[in-house]
Length: 503
Image 1: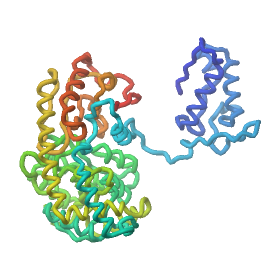
Image 2: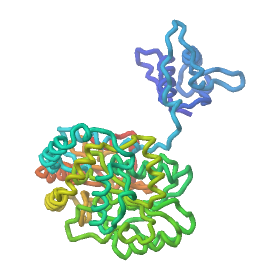
Image 3: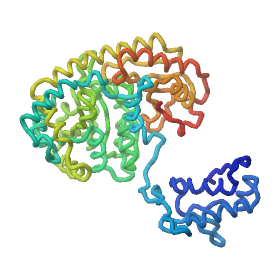
């Protein structure tokens, strides 16, 4: 039964409160077509009101065309098309949510939207976002390069382009792939509108409802959300400081025969883990044996601070099983909206067909800009400076945690990437989110990064986006919030799904 509450002291008549409640629930899609409202006597007894009050509320709903009464079947919600015009001729608003395709919803489905909304906040210290710091975006270099491009190309720089991507840019990307140890042909590369689109396209061409996808646990929440929306069944493999526990993978592959394995082997988001060379080779051996593709999300390749990482899976792959995904959102600017997929030609053809249904092609001007930066060597020089800057920010956050973290907080220093993955003592996450909001600091809760485990004791802190001189203060604010909360036996308690995760 849907819970209804009334305020008998309110100036709004009780029957109107009940009617409004059901109107809202129906319009929001929380009550679907065919739902049977509680019998009048039952609801009247539950609310402690006269049965006439319930009859009046249900009459309002019937007059609005939202429900119908049937002898022996009670009062049920009508389909959207059954709602008539009002007596005065006013057309009733569409109940949009009842018309939309049923989707797999989670409390965290809007988290990417919320994270990007934080970029406009000026009143908080933002440790939640894994985007480049504004002061590290090479605006001057890009402006000068764009000026030169427009002077040379004229209107051509603003025209449309091939769905696969501008050929010159794909050739430059092929050169970059060669530098990463995985040379390929330009025709084996698809330019996408960011790496998020790449993941979405892969899900579209591979997944039917009920298909199995093996993912790391924890993993990038944006990919998990894509796979859930495709109605895939996710199987999580634990991650330790050396990456995916490949030793646990074989039974899953043998029993479930997944469509693909999704992994972030290099400076994983959110854990920062680096998959060892031994495990990389073992992962490919299992993929070959069980004929399972591997989606390698290599978004943090350029951010190594303690020596070079092992070769990419794509570089180690001798049979074309790896689908390689990367982006320039972390190195140049997320606003350029350029990522890419490198994969076998038959698969790439299907990805191109899927892409042309969504946006036809990725931004031409962005492709020409990055092509020029790659060919000139400016990109390589810029990344070298970024690596030094983020290494310093990593040290700043590590020092802040050592200075500010109370007993019970632990973390592992990442060898690269953007994040500290922290374990907290047993505190209520709902209370911590609220307290962090009061302290004007944001963080990413660990929960959306897990398939099954409700890991309220984990948080991800990013040192990439907020100004360097605010990192210590941001950590201090969050740790102050942790310190002020009582320890609880059940850290999940509280209406967590209704609490805004980000301030």
